[in-house]
Amino acid sequence: MTQKPPLPDREKVKQTVAQMREVCRQFDNLNLAFDELIAQIEADIRKSPLTAYPLGKIQPVSQATESER
Image 1 (tube, rainbow, N blue to C red):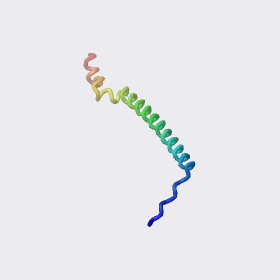
Image 2: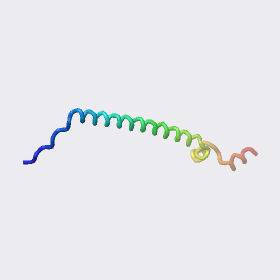
Image 3: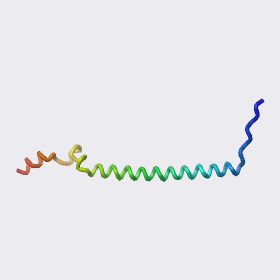
Image 4: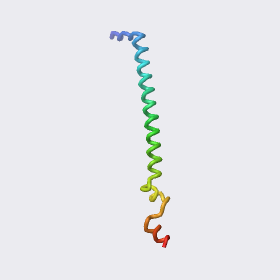
């Protein structure tokens, strides 16, 4: 029959679990920072005059000058 591999040391398992939890916590913090950055960039894009015209929030320059005459 095949031999079963020996079980790892309990202390080693506890250390590995603690390290993995720390890595997960760091990834969660990184994801939160990316989410905040994405939200800020999206807000900047919505405020940009380059996107205001396609969204219909401002008139083209040619129409604005004709209506002012």
